[in-house]
Length: 333
Image (cartoon, rainbow, N blue to C red; front, side, top):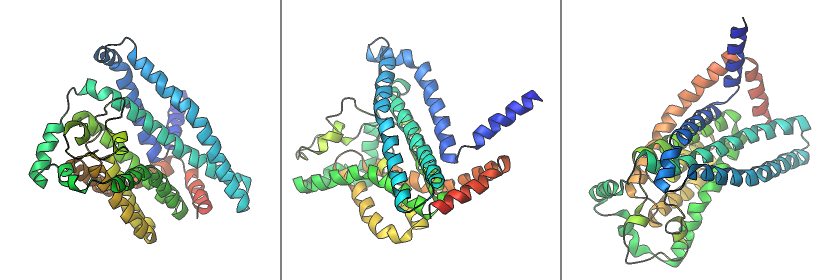
């Protein structure tokens, strides 16, 4: 009987998570296994004893400083809006807790990303840029960044650098937009986005690519801003194939088309600029972007069924969750 109670407790904990949280936990556990199992190999590769633990300390230090301020800021925003709209403090607390769950899911995502960045050279030594370059030459007739070289100018570099950076803010703006429409829309969008990220991280291990900015030579330089994303990095990341900037941007457009169609006129120009920026700024190959688009389409096809399957299982295991989700949906509309 005691064992059955323990299983029920574990089941309740698991099914208390939404789909995007569950895959985040699984990915974090996988990253933890990689961190400990291959730690000594990373130390040998870097030629420094306990290097992986120093890396861990740096990551913890960054989040220890950032997370409390971010949570405090989020709390002020939520409760400030609630006061202005004269909502009950209990309603504001529910909204804040759900926002906190989203925030923590992305914190886990960034931790996994850091682990992948450091461990790809251990798991898959070498880079595959030459392979991607041959594919680009076959598809486009030349390297895409070479084809775009005549367009180089300071004003265009500044514009597209701004567009590239805006991806980060647009990602969270899209979450807010989905929440305004419907909590279920936000939950499905979050699952799709995080699924794309984690599939992309697996691809980084099997196809390590550092990008054209490191491997090709150009007669025309882009100026002072673009190198921030290429030659000024302290460590070269093998994180180009597929382009997750492209994949998640396409997913934004797909989910806006599904749940907030009137915003498409604002999203489509931004999406075009962001994707074009990845090529112009010499961050990605054309093949990277094509792979990112394909990943987005596949994820957008799989996620609705995956999300629905998980929600059905949650409601079977925890019937009260249905009422709670309806309550949150009412708060965010």
